[in-house]
Image (cartoon, rainbow, N blue to C red; front, side, top):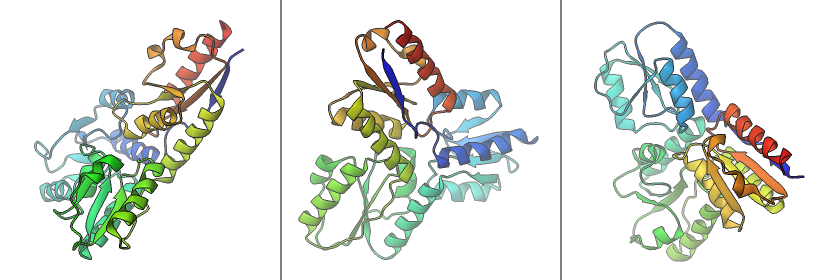
Length: 286
């Protein structure tokens, strides 16, 4: 009999839940069209639900009337975009995750103190673009230890280190140690990695210790979901990243005794339940 072990932390984090509650409230009110600046979260199935409710995704600030209602995505937006929205007179609902908002303010504070940002994150991620907008032109973004080793750091500058909120804490700690050895001076290290990310990654690692494979459910464009799969693979256990149950191949589970199940912070419970039911049905045939 195959055992299915589901992570307790699988699914929505506080920031995602809060953002969707705010969007639900605005979408339920009658009035001008509702927009989000970019996807509210990184999950295509959730976005399809809101599209059916009439919520539109805008990639810029053009095309809004003064009475438009604009919800700022959970990842936040660059500060100049927010200023442009305010100048247009639109009704803004800020659904930025509180942890992201805190990271923005910390980066702004240290930048105003004359320090230059070193940011562990994905270059093209919307959260990273927002965080960078609170830094100066001397900020550097890097995606891992090998990446920062290639960056030319001026010893005469003062630096501070931060991370995209969904980054791998283990990698972040390795970078802290590397920079201490390289710079040979003390520098501020901002604790901007979200507790929900840390908890999910830790539970994924515990799952990996006790199962033959881990199924990770969530959007393919979700950074925190991809990293859950990566941390499992990093300890030598196979992970399968899927968005929906229909993507699973029964052949992958033949002969396995224990299967782990987890999900990213932007994955709704119903999608996780669907995958769980699929695995339970599969178990009956084993």
